[in-house]
Image (cartoon, rainbow, N blue to C red; front, side, top):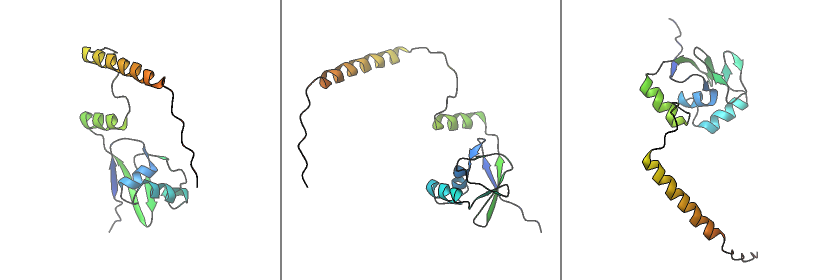
Length: 133
């Protein structure tokens, strides 16, 4: 009988160790993950790891609290990867800076809002009342 190590599939490589512990449900949340890593309870490839955001790659083995997992990189299709990258805030495509007419209208309204806010900022502010305890 062989001891098969459970695989945790990831679609973006590398992944941070604290995020991997959350994905694998080895900890309750990100704060707990960071604490157990910084206190030295997590092993990465049979070595104690103290870096919370240590980059983890395909075939790395993580041990924590008697559980062992292995990272498995699964190449995501182009559409899923695009959605994941957009949600993380990274730039997906390099597009030329073309201004749409609808965006031009928005920029005019933004300029008008800034002018109105600068007018209100010019008014004198009322003094605050002193606080007594």
